[in-house]
Image (cartoon, rainbow, N blue to C red):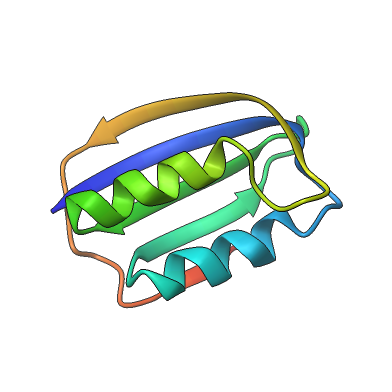
Amino acid sequence: MKRLHVYISGRVQGVFFRAETQRAATGINLTGWVRNVPDGRVEAVFEGEDTNVDKMLAWCHHGPPAARVQEVIVNEKAYTGEFNKFSINY
C-alpha cells in the first residue's frame, strides 16, 4: 500500500480538475482527497494499492482535457489507511 501527497501546477483550476480527480481515483479504488490551493495549484493525497496510486500519479501529469499541467511535485509518505473514500475538500 502506498500514499502520495502531490501538488499539480499549471492551468488546473476552473477546468474540473478536482471532480475528474475524484472520479478517476474512485474508479481505481483509491482513498484520500483533492482541493484547490490559493496559489492556483491543486493539492491531493492518494492512498491505495501501489499500482493504482502509480496510475493516478500518471493521470495527474495530464489531468482532464481542459487542463494544462506544467509540474507535478510528489512526496511519498507512510500509508496510514485513515480515509474511507476519496473526497473533494474545500
